[in-house]
Length: 157
Image (cartoon, rainbow, N blue to C red; front, top):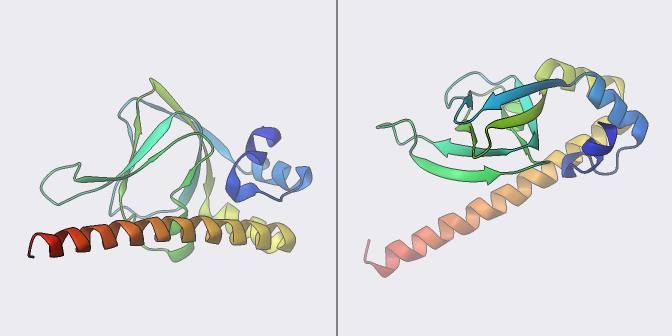
């Protein structure tokens, strides 16, 4: 499992000892096809890494369960990390899709916090990598907003 985690971008730069610590506090979960992993608005206390499968992130438009797909994540992608750092409700819904089973590793927020506090070198690297991941996602979201705004101007909105 340590070698599998080494392929996850938010664990980049961590040594085998640090990856082993992450494995020790991780939990494995399997979600069947179309199973909701978490819902928008729920309290968030876990972060997840996809080990096998595909997870879609959806933002509800208030009229139906699925509104707009924000992301389609594959193996070695992290999701759900925002809620354990800002203590806000989940901003979107996560579904296991495509595969009959989606295999995930998850970490409780309290375990991530404890790991960071007890292992400052691991903590700095992990937080830096998560920040880098979130920055990339924010840049992608900025580009999408810009494209929508330009499209609205083009049609006279």
